[in-house]
Image 1: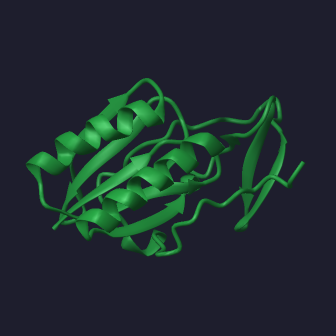
Image 2 (image 1 turned 60 degrees about the horizontal axis):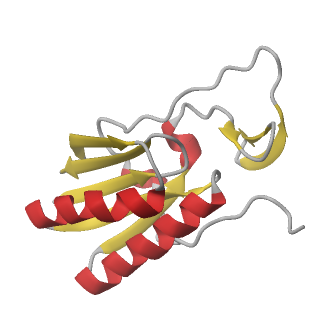
Amino acid sequence: MYQVLVISISKPIKIGLYKNNKLIKTYEKEGKTSDLLPEVLKEILSENKIDKISYVNSPGSYMAIKVAYVFLKTICITKNIEFLACSGFNFNDNSPIKALGKKYFFNKDGEISIDFLDKDCTISQFELPKVLNEDIFTSNTLPIYNLPAV
């Protein structure tokens, strides 16, 4: 069983190809999600029979999340592939994620808040896991917007 995981909320965009939940190939690309996703997914889909596609639906760059959602949802519908989502905090050791300006998203006991970084705060880079934990994914794939409306 092949699965794709897309982390588009940071740069570089990271896409992992998994076989039986084990990472077998990594794609890291600099650029816009709208330019990169079609290119990488075309390559992956031409070489593999994908059963699931998962993506990070919160928190982070709203534009990257929206573009990823629309593109990946369309691929999953047209190719009859299962579509799943999860939080970005699962892939950066639960460290703060860039929000707007100088503010960051924080995950404290499952509650997402927005604040400035403390001086001694460490930010971890996003990493594709070597083995996927199925328990972190949900079938509720809609983007989650953590900022209040303006």
